[in-house]
Length: 99
Image 1: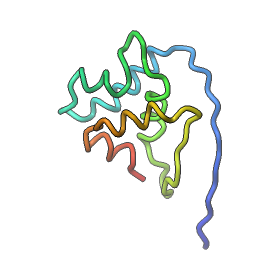
Image 2: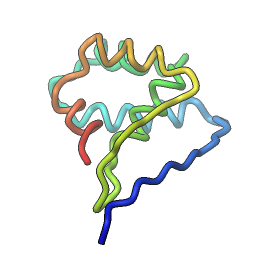
Image 3: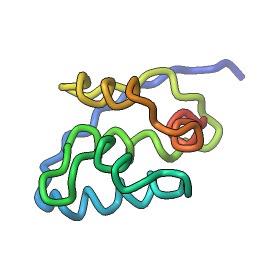
Image 4: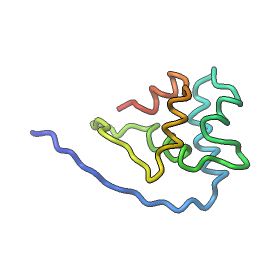
């Protein structure tokens, strides 16, 4: 059986940014070395979450069983990429890139 590639898109309307932030924070805090300051640098403060960073953390945190992730994009990926370049701890990065 050959390997097939698929692309799908998901359009979201964020209705509860604080709930989104809480979910992204749970993923990030799986790394016990991550401080509150690091968390805020990654996904913004609870009161003013970085929506795109939260979405990317959540979207990339779970692999699809039997699949390898080939690409991930968000309409405005620059803030998420700045966060990644700023140094997400390796355990969080591993969770984000696990396939």
